[in-house]
Length: 350
Image (cartoon, rainbow, N blue to C red; front, side, top):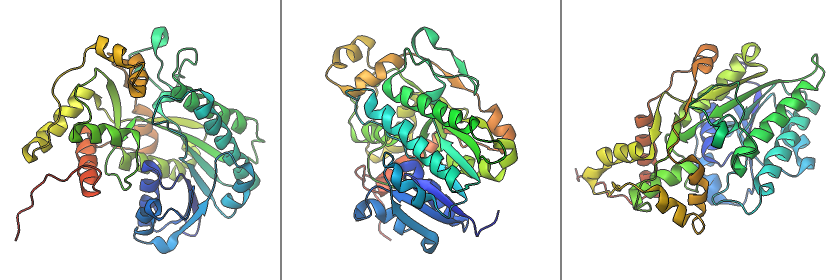
């Protein structure tokens, strides 16, 4: 690829956004990354410490500020739109997550079209294909869409935002529109460059630091952040093939919370980390859900084993996935190194 062309990465200080930014800089690409606040040095520090950071430009942008995106995108050839709200607690209203996800996506796409961007890669989620309740299935492909009638607010936000993106794209003149690809990751593990909260990081943190006394019966489709980053770049490299396509981005690992805990116990128990063993009962989660926002989020997925096809992304983009164990363990070590989790590992003095 032409190294003189510039990438825009939205959500540059997030878990995935920071990793994609580092991934591109390591390959000598020019990168512009959006951040919410350039004066927040703590959040910017990981980005500023990357090798080749002379190729990195940081700009402030707000998903809901339509006026800022024309200048933010000006001069960029490719966009990786990663930024999207992920609530740390169950939102009071659906609009808290749906509105910024949908309006932010459309603001970026409209500015991309006006700036003659070549290709936009939209970070969606398996939340946009997976359903709960009567619509739930055991196996999902890119042909599926989450049932909005039963979806949680976050799942709705991802599905509605992605559908809005495809509707906008399909209504553009075919001879003038940019290429569009959506990547739908599972729960993303792998080495973290940041220290602020994010979903998979909370899982590892709570298991290692004793924040979860009981293990819920929840199943996850897992993927390594490094593989998701590669998928975003491959979508652009294989532009003609990936244009107009959505790709589920999951490894072959579908792991129960109990299995994630076992991986961490096996690797870190010898250092003194007390990873919980006791299983939570369904009635216990129901009892605490009214008072525990994460419980309310987990409740619809209790006991649901759901798998996701990665056949298409393997075939079209040539992605070979790391194992779930590698993704989990590498995230844990990065969180210990970044002091998100107490360091109990005793390193002998030389």
